[in-house]
Length: 375
Image (tube, rainbow, N blue to C red; front, side, top):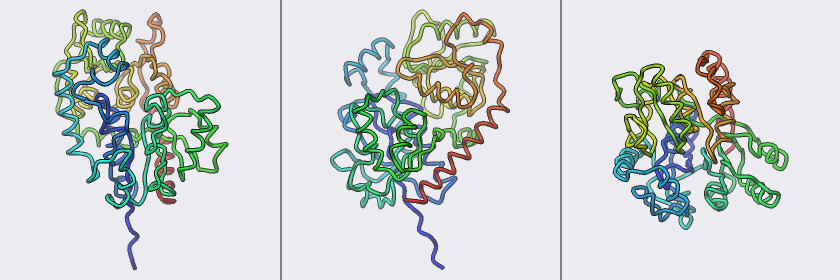
């Protein structure tokens, strides 16, 4: 009896090319790859695809990218030496851990990936690949628009980011949804409109980083870096209130502060580790007493590794964090008002969180298997 052919699935996402490195973006593609290995019979290939917006980017010197990014980094007092160290570590992680495509692709050559990589189907996701604001348009690869993707593409945990759809923009988006055979959304944004205007299977699914067990991440994280007890700060956007909150907790608990954010504040006394690589990022979260962040994946990995954490609001990043916290009944871990001092007395019941997480995980894996089966 002939064995069923193993499908080669090309993962198309925001991961290898960027304006500046992002722990979550790199880890979500790694997790998607490993989830395909763990839960399906498919062979994952992470497509080395560079969106047009990143073609001229130099992650070693993000100040030269755009006026918008320059403004962000000027505010955050970026140390280019630290960026270079971080970038080298991230590149090594990608080289060592990714099942990477043989070729490198752009909008001009993406169609070639089908034959060159012997692809049977494409998986678009996860992360904010459908953010029209961030990518300044509907990226053709992320929206499954290329001829090579026709009738062989699914989406998993794709996100619209903070994009707000007016009627005309929504019509354009819905037209592109027809490029997919099944759609898995990370957030509820536009869920109803897509479900109502397409005949597709539409499911809300977990970020792929939540599909892997904590033990998997423990096998790749570095050894403990900071020997003394510490509080970890991971900020994707500088927030004075978050720093003051961290200082208050650290003083009360008499623990050190470690900061892996890409900015430095001369008035803030802490141990800066903003050159940390992926393995160090995971380790620093795992061994922290408390994590304080305004990052979605900073929050996600705090949950995966069962850490006490507090999440702060963020401009252009709140929607996805709010959706995730609400999903696991953890909205009380968001610090919207620092005057509510009683929040410091609350701790997380991870037994309850795990029950919810396992339920959504089972549902997400079921969707993934179904979507791959119909390719």
